[in-house]
Length: 69
Image 1: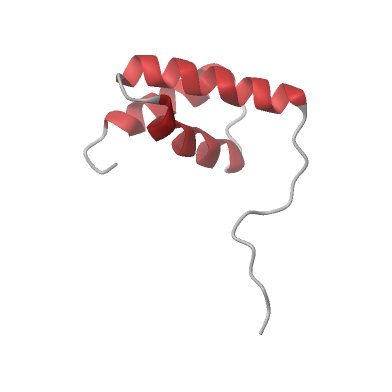
Image 2 (image 1 turned 30 degrees about the vertical axis):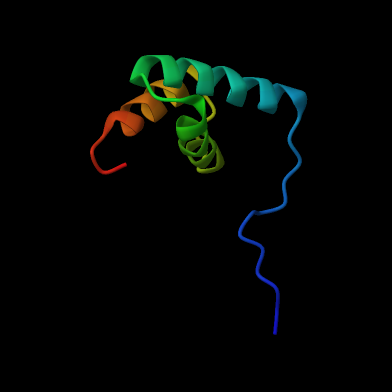
């Protein structure tokens, strides 16, 4: 049986972490949701390649207010 790690191994710099933290704060304020509920959305979008902090926060805030989430 092989082990499947759902989280891909990648190194994150302090710049990456700072970008994610700032995007979570902005997205939580825009969507009026808790940072804990917005953080997985921000991380998922970031892993999919969205690296612009403003667009990342805007997209995560929009998805957090969506009925499908």
